[in-house]
Length: 160
Image (cartoon, rainbow, N blue to C red; front, side, top):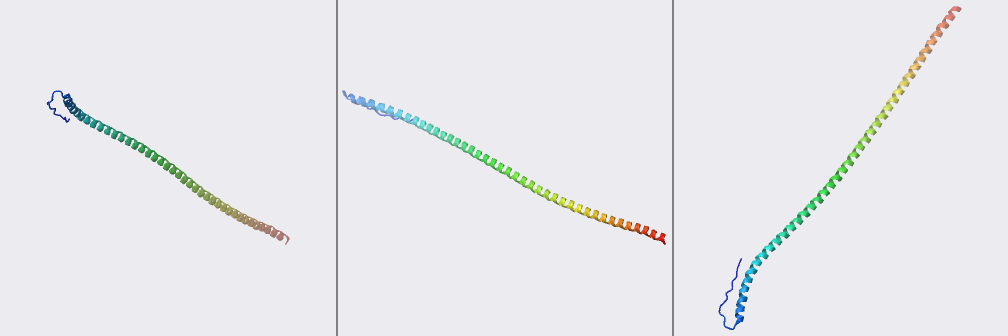
């Protein structure tokens, strides 16, 4: 606290009331200067407090903005992760479908091959059966010839 003092001279001439009033004014000015210096310090303190308050409000606003931005980015990232998960799910479903179709094609080919093998086996069995039938018929025919020959040779023997 700086105090300013004003010297007041006591030389006052009789009948000169203005000088006394002037001295009183100077004394009051000294008090005002002292009061104004206290007020200036208080004002400076108030300004510092106001500046600090503004800074604190600004920092709080920045923190709030940063929190909002963080929340926005987190939401954005969550949405991106959800999109990626959905895409991965669709890709997995697509691959599973492709694999199922490939397995179905292989099974169809195996079925066709099995049917063809069964047809070949059936044809081979038919050929063998046909060959066995022909062989049996031939044997039967030959046996019948032999029997006929035997009977006919007996007939010829009786007549001679």
